[in-house]
Image (tube, rainbow, N blue to C red; front, side, top):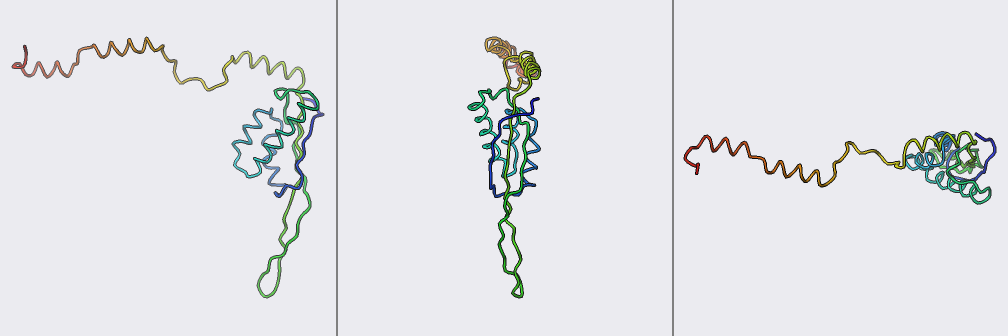
Length: 173
């Protein structure tokens, strides 16, 4: 995996850096598609902003470096502390306590996979086949075969009706 890449930065985000780092650790080293899915399923509030930042980094790589999004992965993702706003809250007996409004600067760097890694991924995709969806639970028969099987069941004699007719000899024709 290559070390250089294309970066996107989001500055002065009103979330503390440790909270952002928790989510960034989830996507670091993942390919773009997996990282987007991870951020979409993440319940942290900052995940939406990180998804936009990831899309921006991918767009930068596509536009500035002409690298397709399928060849990219998140090579580095980090959050630095930004300036802290200081506020005061009144407390008992005329005192005041400091409230710290923390901010952070977030950077996501995307890079292109190495050639051998790209080839390995392409071979894996070819081996997997065209469909990416979840396989069905059981193979389904064609509609005509299902209808024919249903007709056979409907045309079969009813064992309950035969048993009741055998019990009541006066109802026979």
